[in-house]
Image 1: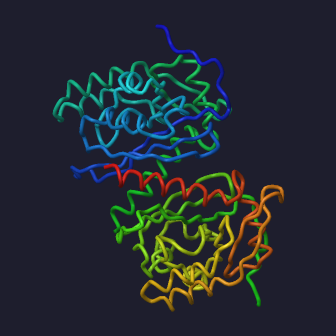
Image 2 (image 1 turned 60 degrees about the vertical axis):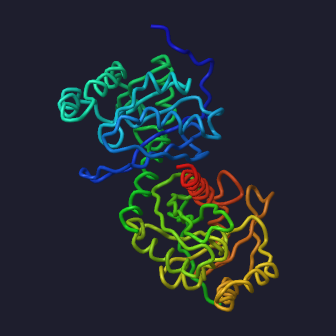
Image 3 (image 1 turned 90 degrees about the horizontal axis):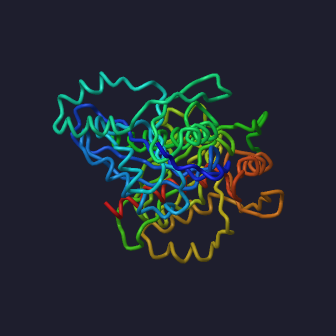
Length: 199
Length: 199
């Protein structure tokens, strides 16, 4: 399959890391989604936010709108997601996200996704076929060695060549096993959520 | 005056940077306050949040509670504020914040505060005497040279020796003229606010 090849991957390549806040399992409400713009693995450049429904089906569209409406859009070179499921099983179709934003998408996870478990869980939800199609659309799960090749994480990609995606994940994972933009998006999303519960 | 002297200032000293989101001038509501935990000038360790009333008088108490209730509290060594006024003229009394949290407080601004202007503005608000006392309580405005001593910013301090405060501001201003925790707190608080207006 043809893939978009980067001419050059700069150490300060602008990446967006997207993660959701935690939620109480029985909460049928919305979960905040935080997008963090990083220059490579070092420097936070901006923050954006949207929200998606728990176990809803609109995460792809909501994240695409958040990106397209951001003042950082023109600078962004890659979207990185913390896996492909947000707010429970609100599945992001990374091929559609790539098409809508015209940006490569890399979904990164610390653990290898367990598709049997996901498939089972989806059966209990409305539009389970549509969700399962979005899961399959993310394609092959690829291993990436990080942190001087001592540890590994997993990625699924769209709109980018495997070797480029691997380089970008490695380059931006400066403080932990996952890209810094994703680590920080998680910390911000968690910090926001705490307030919601407290105040 | 005696001041608390640090035994040693580590490059990864845990600092909290506190800033508020923007608000529409006629909005009598609440403004989000974001606290960002940084290791020195490099590494985001956590995010906390509270909210204060526009032109209210509870910012000192609300920020103190946010800090004291945070899981990061035990690791924190310094609180840094983006100036002493939040959400309009909700003034933080840095001596009281220092006393309540038992942490040194450094309020940093890019521009030298204009006390005549502040005094005038306070006259139009309830409890103007109480607010003005909090402004005076912040004490002398000290110049700090940053970025290889080419630029300067200003600070007011409580519970810390001037030389230590100066070192910490210099050490943590890695990406701009102000401490990284404050730069990032501003970006997060601004990012959150945008959503409020859009959704």
